[in-house]
Image (cartoon, rainbow, N blue to C red):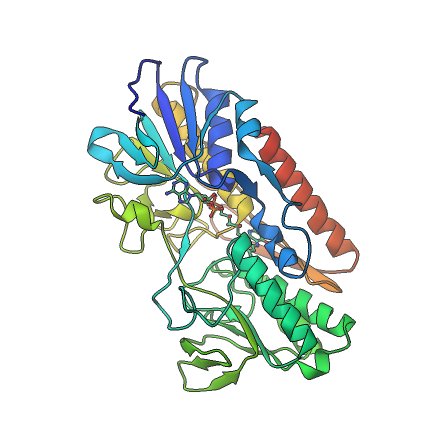
Length: 405
Ligand SMILES: Cc1cc2nc3c(=O)[nH]c(=O)nc-3n(C[C@H](O)[C@H](O)[C@H](O)COP(=O)(O)OP(=O)(O)OC[C@H]3O[C@@H](n4cnc5c(N)ncnc54)[C@H](O)[C@@H]3O)c2cc1C
């Protein structure tokens, strides 16, 4: 499929998840009817990653998902079920598994990938640990936990240095503790939580409000925790920390370090040394002005206030907002409407950690200084809040209601 730009303008969005959908719907609203918007995404379905934790504990994987083709077609957006393998930035061409596509603007929203080589046994084909970054990994972790329920033993949950999606591991630890108690086997499962972050609740952007609340929750539930750890290796029955300490583990579920998309690494000068797309405060590539990036895939060329690090928090909520802002800037660069007023939204982070019998609602906001709040909420309130968050976000992304908050 070799295409030429016989229409007015063609914007290609690589990746059809939170950031990609936020971008595609916004582009469709802003660009003219003759302009084309194409989403290139290999998976065929949107999966609400925030609910994978509950899929690990037995819930249906399909509850928080929908087919991309009809959702995008209903909005006049072309969907190509394929993967981008290369970006030829000098020619404005992406090479996909199904041929080449020319673009006037490209938005890269391809998320991140587990780094499979950083820690022996943690990731990759012969790994001993589990992770939860997609449906397959959630099913594998679920099977190991089933065996643990039948034959209880020590459990290690956590996040390696360089990991992301921290809320998932906190939520899993709390929810799993609840499940083990309900099964009456918690006293036979010594439970350790490890993180490379400096303190419990550091979600990668200094969310200090969660710290004391999580310490209390973990202490109440008798979950031993280690912060600021490095991991030397993971074996089939143990996790060996950088300090030399060996934690016995019948099952370990550890979020690995993350990198950007490996396929895009093959595209010269496109990514930084970690595989992420370097962008300015307009989400525009620092070298190629016709390329933009949003969500987990991008890294700013400097910290954007109120953040103090170039990388924004990796959350579904923020990825949608970043996609919307990037798309507004793309449309503005093509003469369609004003650019985004702000790089980051005033409300930077909204998370619900449903820990089964209790949980935390976390939010962060601000323009110059980040303000944080963490509120402990009981069951079933926390569970309803999580369900409402899931249904609302999935509905919004399926129907393209980008006008709503
Ligand atoms: C277990 C878990 C729990 C989480 N819990 C929370 C939570 O409670 N709250 C919260 O806000 N966030 C949570 N997150 C984080 C949230 O899911 C991510 O921040 C969000 O998915 C990032 O969206 P994204 O669109 O940037 O990237 P992704 O969702 O990773 O999407 C990238 C997309 O790009 C596609 N793609 C990849 N390579 C290519 C290619 N070469 N060509 C075309 N397409 C490609 C992929 O198939 C994928 O669909 C959690 C994540 C996990 C894994």
